[in-house]
Length: 387
Ligand SMILES: *Cc1c(COP(=O)(O)O)cnc(C)c1O
Image 1 (tube, rainbow, N blue to C red):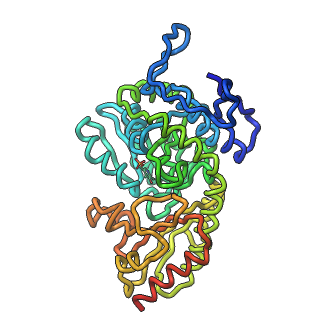
Image 2: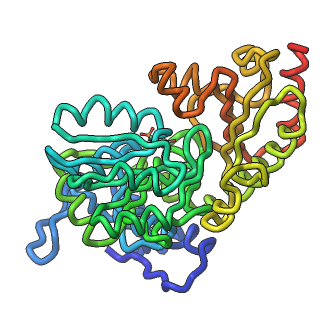
C-alpha cells in the first residue's frame, strides 16, 4: 500500500494534516481511502495482513501519523487508552517483576494495577513522585518499569522527564509515560529519553468526544516486543474508527492551541476569585513546578483543576453550569467539568484520594474551544446561584 513519505523535516502542523496519508491511486481522491477488508491476499514475501496484527493499510497509516507527532520511530493503535496501557505493561512484565508508579494516576490505570497485577505475581509500589529521588527510593533489584503521568490527573503535578529517564537508564529500567493530558502538541517525552509514550486517543487525538482509541509510541525494537503480546491480547481498533481518528488528528494542533489559551485564561481568572481556594495549572507562576513545565512542555495544556471554597457546594456548582457540561470525559472541543471525588476517582478510598491531594471541593475542568468570555460567565452564574 502506498503511504505518502513525509520528509522528516516537515513541521508539526504539516504532519498533523499529512503524515501517514494513504494515496488514492485509483480515483485520485484527496484524503486517505478507507479499507475495511479483514482479509487480504496471501503474500509470502511480506507479512500477512489482518486487523488483529495491527497492519491493515489504515492502521499502518494512522500509526505513522501518531509516531510522527511524537518524533518516534513507530506506533501501534489500540481500541482504547486502557488497551494501550495494559498491553504496554503486560508485554514488558512477568511474574516476579516490580513496577514503580506515581501516586496520582488515571483512575482506570490504578484500578488495573491493583486488580490485575497481584493475580500475576507482579509487584508494584506507588510514590508521591515529587522528585526523582522519590522514585529512586523505590527501586528494587527486580524493578523493570517506571510508569509516570505528567501533567497528572487531576492535580496537574509535573514530573521531571529527563531525570526520570536518567534514573531509569542507570538502573536498566524501562520508562513509560501516559502523555494523554499534554497531547503531542504540548509535550514529546521521547525527546527527554522516555522509552514508551501512551495516549488515550479518546481524548485530545480524537478530540470530539466520539471516538474510543489508544496508542503506544516507541522505538521499532520496543514496539516489536509489545506487538508480540498485543496480537494475543487482541485490542485492535476497527478500521472505520482508525480512519475517523486520522481525520480528527488533522485539526489536533488548532484545537489544542485554543484549549491551551482558554485553560490559561480560566486559570488566571479563577486564581483571583475569592470563592476559589486554589488553582492547579502548570501554566501559572504559582504552580510549584512552573519552571520545569516551561522547560519540558511546549504549551501547558487544556486541563486544570481548582478547589472551591468551603462555602460553595461542589455538586450544586457543577449542576448549576449551563454551558459547561458536567461530564466524565475530557479533551473534547466542548468545555467539561467534574468532581474527581464523585466521578473519575470515586473508586479510590478516602485515604488514597487524600494521598493524591484530591479533596472534596476539587473541580477538574477540561477547556474546550468556545469563547473564553462565555465560559467565564457560565462559571460566575453558577457560583452566584449559591452566594
Ligand atoms: C481517559 C484516560 C485513559 C484511559 O483511556 P480510555 O480510552 O478511556 O481507555 C488513560 N489515561 C488518561 C490520562 C486518561 O485521561
